[in-house]
Image (cartoon, rainbow, N blue to C red; front, top):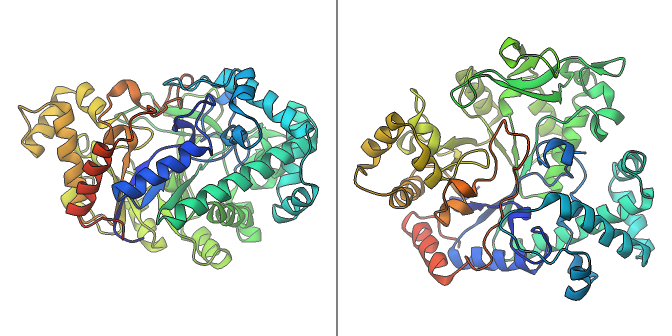
Amino acid sequence: MARGLGVLLHITSLPGKQGIGCFSAEARKFVDFMQKAGLKYWQVLPFCPTSADWGNSPYAPLSVFAGNPLFIDLLEFLDPAEIKKYKLDTEDAQVDFELVICNKAKALRDIYKSGFDKAEFENFKKLHWWAEPFAEWMSKKFGDEKDFHLFTQMIFFRQWSALKKYANERGIFIIGDMPFYVPFDFFDVQTNPDVFLTKDGRQQGVGGAPPDSFNPAGQNWGTTLYDFKKQKNNNYKWWCDRVASSCNLFDISRIDHFRAFDYFYKISSEDADPREGEWEKGPGFEIFNAIKTAVPGARLVLEDLGGEGAESVQRLRKKVGSPGMRVLQFAFDYAANYHLPENFEEDCVAYPGTHDNNTFVGFLNEAKPSVRQRVDEYFQSRNLGAEEITGLALERLAQSRARLVVVAIQDFLLQDEKFRMNRPGIGTGQWGYRMPADCLTDKLAARIRKLARDSGRMQD
């Protein structure tokens, strides 16, 4: 990765009059704005289809290989008046997932029934080995014809390919995201049980996290654990296929929860107290050795954030040889501090905060007095407001040695805690943030461009 400045914005957060952000003209306008602002990298969240039962989280995918049909731009097929008929002509500040899921499915069914290119359809099936099994599983679980689910995947991949090409032609690289765990009832576990820790159709423990400063009671995610010992027998083929699939979608892929490749936290069941879990050894470097052989040239970013066992995780990350992550918000809540900009290695991607954190303004507004004191001491900002301190934080990050700095759009916009994307541990009401339609101004582009230019991160 070349030294640069990027922005974190999920597709669903784009503005537009289809109820949810999608691969529409607004996505291309955002790429144009990035180019004007001197930004090189656009980071998105996982593209996997989501489920209302799991709070519409992109980190609880129906399948890690499939795409989310909610991203499809209906204006390829319908005019604005027809979209209004499906009650999708909204541009609310939050996605109404219940409305969008129901009504977009109706629109896509009608589009499917109107006919499509059969040659393109057959070619799509040949290119994507997982597509037919996934469509068959979707048909059994949710209804509709198998070919309808194949059709929506075909349109998703065609539209994304066109949008990515548009971005790449303008010097913008896409950073995708690979969720680590998957829910038990969904496609990947149900059709590849040998990949996971299951027995007689039941999970043998679930994923989660022990208590920490953000979640004193720990977290029980209820997600299915991997049987890495069994995967070793076929050289981790499923994971190699995952990485290959992600590399086909994106220029760079971030692997979520990288620490679990070193040690993962096992909780006995979905109902168990997460404080009673235990650490178990992961596959370590061996799995990445297999990935490098199967997917040569894969460009990865590894979520190697702090917590218990951080030093061991860092050793594994350095052995793998891919950049890790640094998060400025963590610099003021931990004793040991590789999250401070002056301590960054060059080989890292630095953030004010990620999709799981508060906005930086919100972080300052809600910080404990002791944390706010450390912030003020660091930035010499005792008499400054949250927006001014956020500006200082972005400058400090941009001037750091980190090869890449990625800033959530909310932090560029100086939005407060009401605009955060996710609150970990809260299962509903998350992931709905949408960027204001009129926010991509020339003034904002000039401010970001100055930040990129002054820090040597300007797009060539």
